[in-house]
Image (cartoon, helix red, strand yellow):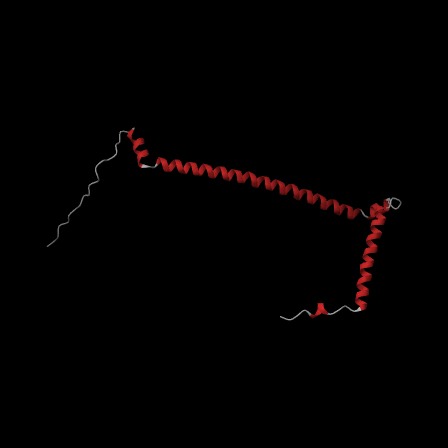
Length: 136
């Protein structure tokens, strides 16, 4: 890979002076704005109307921030509620599964069908074989 030679070159004095002047202009504009805004004598209807779009924009951003915060908190509450519900349903599933396993054992089935008059077979099943005659 090639080296970055542009960053290694020093800026000329003219470019440095232009950048410095631009930074100083911005700083002066910011100071002028803050002085105009915070000075009690300069606070007039004209200056308030002049900054009204900016104030409206800031108010809109604040409302969006508050709305987003409420939405996020509501979503977190829903997630917690659903998590608890999932946990409870998981416990119900496990208990029902264990109960079904217990009810399907041979001894439990024998106890339930005994009340119907059916009894468990004691002798092994008999295999019936059919012998086919060979054709001659």
